[in-house]
Image (cartoon, rainbow, N blue to C red; front, side, top):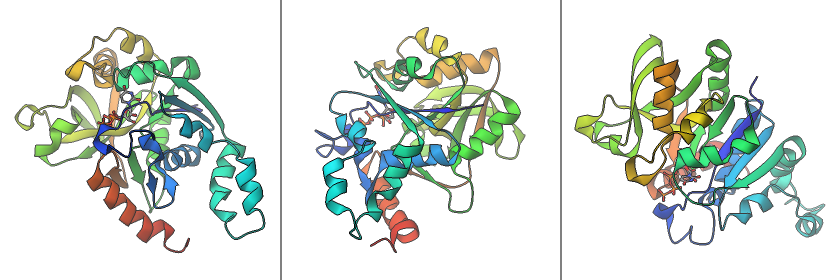
Length: 277
Ligand code: UTP
């Protein structure tokens, strides 16, 4: 059974400067809720209780967000503003939060390896909070992936079809379709040029990983951009055994950049928050 979710949140967020100069990108709000809270809620809704967050310098606000704020809560007690903190409070009461720091920002693979001591020797989920995933029709993306894990017991990456000209922004897979929306991965390329991309199936920020991934990452040399890439370690896993790619149901917004962020804000205001204010 999967109990833990890892949130790599140590990146610099350079696409969002200057907003991210002194503030973690994961604290950027979509309407009135920070990205990291949407991510933790998705994990909690999938039944996970242990939230493990990989932070870095300048990321203290993430820890403060999932802690009580006595003065503030005292101040708004009995007013109609109390309801704004109910969701956060519910997470604090029902989940555990643990933190570790990635000391050098050497890529997503390295960030995941930095979380090893929080995860231990068990399968786990990974959520990148700047990829906001929503499914208004049913289970969240992580819940969908956990169901799949129960059947297949191997690492799973979430994928989405992207326009060919955008493959350079993603890890891209090639695989054999084994069931509608599910591929067995044969190869994986990090940020390929459109002409070199093996398909237009791009990996987005949701993963289920089996714990052997840690040793595989530790053996991985820096790849594209001098970063330790999770795709390189996953490729080894795919060659030795099995990695699945899953075309999820729902919407995904790349909130690491302005365009996706604004789309997400409009979408969430329209569908989730309109009656909040
Ligand atoms: P991104 O590729 O979006 O990088 O990382 P970034 O540094 O956050 O943002 P830009 O591109 O400079 O604007 C994808 C995810 O991996 C995490 C990020 O926090 C983000 O959630 N990450 C990336 C780390 O935790 N550590 C790293 O060294 C790199």
